[in-house]
Amino acid sequence: MSDFSIGNLLDEDKRASLQTFSGNLPLDSPRSKKNVVSRVAYLIGVDARHFGLDQGENMNPQFYRSVYDEMNADKEARIVRSLCRLRTKLQRNFKAICTEMNSDVKNIDSMPDLIPPDILQSLEEDGIQFVRPRRKTEDYVVDVHNYLLPHVPNCQKFIPAWVKWAYIRNLFFINKGNTVDGNKEAAKLYYEYRDLFPYQSYINWSPDMRDGNILRDDAKFLPILYERNRDKFYDMSKVTDAGDAAIDDPSEFFTNAQRVLIAIDCENADPCKVIGIMKELERRNMAGKIAKVILVDDTHTSSQWRALRRNENLPLEYYMTDRVKDDKSAVDVALTIKFYREIAQSKAEGCPIDSAIIVSSDCDFWPLIELTPEVKFLVMLEYDNCSQSYYQRLQNNDVQFLYIDEYFGAGNLEMKTEIVLQETIREIEEGYLSKINVFSMINHALTKLELKMNETETANFFEKYITPMSITFAKNGSAVLQNKTTLKD
Image (tube, rainbow, N blue to C red; front, side, top):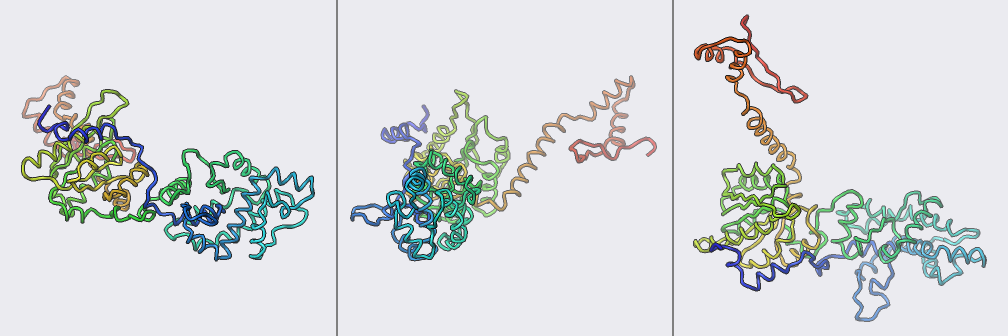
């Protein structure tokens, strides 16, 4: 084992921590905000006890009581909440309500065990006389939808402007909600999966057991909500109290650093974005502080990493890992070992590395960060590939991170164009043009025609007739020979 092996760098406790570390990081974060989920929970009719009402002093409410009090003072919000509470009761107790209405000739205002009187009373106080004679249960469900239509838009003021209101609005309106059939389909889904709905409150939602409690906090709810609308929620700093760990620009990190080590996990990073980062660091004169860029690759990753390897301006060490098993990569282990070797070697040489950048969305590198307290870390990750638990772990430990999706969002096309252009030129020059030798073609033509030229004649032929030619590309991508000369010329 070499002097700089990871075994020599870590004591027994640290090695044990690395070996026993699990990717199942805790999901709950004391710093996660509940501002949005508290407002949504109020509107969809989540029971008041979850806001701390009518509970003892030791109650730990899931939502903000201040939000409840604020919204409950607004007529429009109260109406939407009451209607949503009523719809949930109608959906949950549909069969029992139908039985009482049909057999006992009752209306919904005379069955307090199934429809709490305070719901109808609140609606009446706010100007909505909901109960009418000769209505069926399914008619009342349609009525709820129709009453919600004009009142839900008036609650947009309670949702922060940085949240897409259309996605919140969709929670209240089902497809064909103004028809009995549309509500029957919704009721069937709710009745079968009601335990998967948030606090069993009905919303327009396709429940998934993997989601768990979608209203746990804003950091969980908004990414799921956006994903269900085929969108991505990026600004995680908005949903946590400790937003200072997320940075928008690496300039300050480099300003405070003396020597920076960059470790790139090629399996868990987008080559186009990473190459763009390296170019940006060079352009902004930050590359001078880079002690080394460690690039650990795998045979299954993109060939675009070649573009970074060709950068002669960076102190780059490239390592290609082997796979012992086809389904098991060794990139994270190799990168960790090389990282610790570089830290130890720089310290032994009297020029220690004080700062490091991990370019990866993989939470497996958390032990590396945790076990190297003498180094200041910046994690560059992609929102699409970063787990919520890893994000929260970084936040809770004040480890700075940067979403490269956002940092290079606007200029990504230009960077991608440059990388593709470089790779295409390489393919043309190394893959095709390198195989072309005109003198071999001339000799092949002479042999085919059973003719001969001496060396001087061949050189003159090449200079006069071949050199003026050029190769262009047609619209279909085919190579075309231009400036073809003839003896008449």
